[in-house]
Length: 569
Image 1: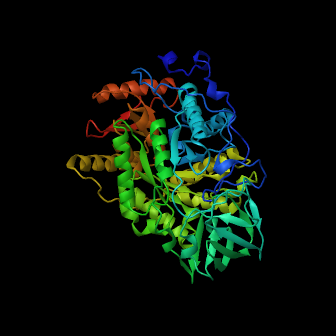
Image 2: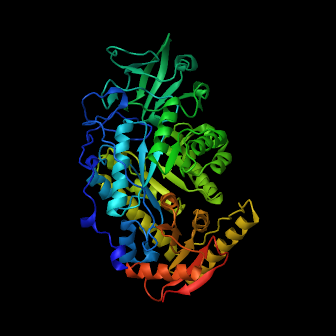
Image 3: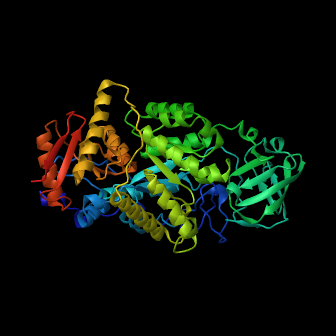
């Protein structure tokens, strides 16, 4: 049995051709809406495309099969459990945006070994061929090296943003400079200090005297004149202009909403990207600038129609004023949410962002939806090897609020120190979580009933009872045997002091559970005989040094509606 559980790299098949194919590691034309930036000059690239050395060679990887005698667990988590024990394992999940700094096989493996639970692909940047190669590499690491990294695809969205900068990665706007923002298409040489805008109604919607914010206020302009399709603006706060940066307008202290009335939430490009994501089998699709629950419902229906076997979760990105007006309905319709603070901070007063973040985290937990806190967590680490103390405090607050996940954007995609940035998230999460348990902070959040059937109500009550019992008895771990992952998510919602070992027979369910706070997902086949399941789990876990004799385990399942308390033999 021990031999069956061993990850033997020497016996693995030789790496497929895509592993040796080089993706460009140079900075690429990118959008400031997800802070992926560089101040270095590069060769021009056409319309936000990542240069590839050659087109990817199609590689078909067979889906993971579940051997009844094998338990699949992320190898990085296995090392953590073996070295530190279950109660000291990290509860907060970590999401890394993949870009030129981290697209190589070695870099991806370093992130996976460092604790990356989810790899995010930002469809604002790069070709689909580039993203396909990254997906292939992550899947290969999962299957050959024993990781279990999930893949999230993030759509571009349809908000107003700048075009490229003629191939440059940045341009400096100084105080007093006059820049032209135009809806014209420049087929030839672009005039100096001129930037294209993606929204045809741009010049009609803005007025002289309006304030234009680029990338949430990183650069500010005042509108001084309108000439046909051109809008003349004077720079009032200097800074770097980055390709495809988000644009917002304020008038008399209020956000101008009319400018995006003609833009759909999911653009035609987004639909093509969504088709690509479904075909590639991504685990999550994050939808940008969601304004209503109907958009989420439409997308979930579309995914179900495209593939009856698809198990793609839909994440609603809360990053606009329109999202906040329908917040509860949007979260209820989705499979999770992301607090995209960068773009959100451009549409609401800055002092409101921390309050909105906490509100979204609480609401997601009450509705049993995982939530990710994103944008500018460690932005200084794009250039520097250590974060500011204010950034560490910001990360600590998100962990205290018990968000399910934290996300790196430019820090991991384009930054000079992606592994160090991930290490900071990991170490801060571990320290704050330990402090929370040591200080025995009471979790006073009221969790409303969310069940729609009597059977689901029973599951909710069982999870509440199991959590209280585990906390009072200081159990080493909670075990849950779940075919769909739902009961595991209910335990995560209760935020127990000990980790939750979630056993599921489905590899896709295992990867989806990667995003839930406190869950350690295992892929393991099991039967309806709970005694047999426990005996086999104990044997497999002990053989790999993740639990030991005498450990106290609280066990539940969605097959047998009961709570079992048992010591590991």
